Length: 605
Image 1 (cartoon, one colour):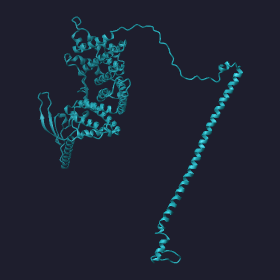
Image 2 (tube, rainbow, N blue to C red):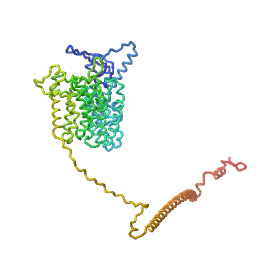
Image 3 (spheres, rainbow, N blue to C red):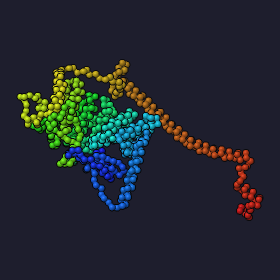
Image 4 (tube, rainbow, N blue to C red):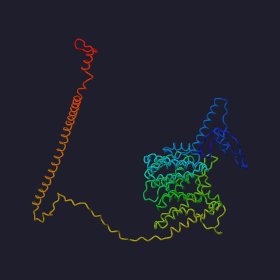
């Protein structure tokens, strides 16, 4: 059976041997039967679909059966060991510096999402660089910070593929706990956090450029240049860790540039790309709202998204106004031409208590066998999310940009004008036919939502009149006071003191030459004196080097002589005792005792 198929990352399959122990029949005719599987290691899984079960190949080889029994026993031992490790989770962990080492800790000590969060909290608590004994953990904690970022993106991608995972996994709560851990680590060392975030954003930017180059090589349903959901969720957590109101910030501004570049350059080729673009536009609005920054990319993108919902007879006219590159070629993709049909299809399903939500839910296409986002359910969510962001921008910049609201929201105002038929008042004299109403009139809730945005736009752009052009005097030009000394040009004749002394021009010229000669003479004397001092210093250094070398050799000789003299004095004090025990004296002593003979010629034997 495919073990826990709904919770596998990216729908991967892991087949294990097991036995079907129960079958649960559906309560209705349209239901699907599910099975209960007992695996060889004792684990039991309920609610297994038929597509996740396959028959095991039969074999008659007894050796193979014996090997399988041994493997089953080993698996049971490993399961018991993991259960014991989970029950006795330690309070102090070594810092995992790679994602694989973190996964090893999780597989050994954790079975649920809350236990994973406990492991991460204990790793940070026991290895924080604020502790006195952990001052040398800066490099390890820097690597652990990057591991946490990669873990965040992996959990976010798993949410996109398999959802929250229920109470056992709780992926949304895992992301919340990871955000808290990242915030505490950032407070411990902002420099380390800034360096890790900067490197991670650089990696994301390089990956974005690579995907943009590969877009023409892949089909629209197979490949997308937009970042994954895990990356979007990671950048969603960034404003909760760093301040977004700073004029300059080493992490927030590069992230904002990355988001705006993604919003402008990544082409929208299907409904999934459109939903991701709306999510990123919401992130940019969140980044810039508190600091009152103007993002032209978001304004142009939201205006282009509104033009996707116009009536069919205005499609070609309004599509040409999408000047942003990401929406320039939407006419070539049929999935984006039916967004308005998704709005009109559900007439009474939306209300203020049940508004449409932005959804990334996948739906398998029977013809292509590919999973795609259901455009019928997601079109209303995209439409309402776009209107909500426009309302947020208008509330943010109301009265903050003086008389430039008309120019600031001009593109959005033109897009709202393209949807003019959807906000027309309903009256008996102006009631369209049923056929036209089905194609052009939106549901009541969406029409009211659009009308509210239009009224707010009219109120903001028409609340003040632009002041007429006035001719005003320019501000007075004032130069900065210079503090540079005035230098006299020696080649230029000036009377100065000579005029007051009633000198002639020839006499003044002679005095000037004499002064120049005197200055040059002093300069040459000064240079010669400095050269002499330098030469004398070098001569003395060389002489000191030679004298020091001779002095060192002489001191070594004196030391050797003093050592020899000391040895002689010691021998004298001991009465010649040091001279006994060797040499010719030893030979003569043995010869006297007849233990050693002397041959002819004086040689010893």
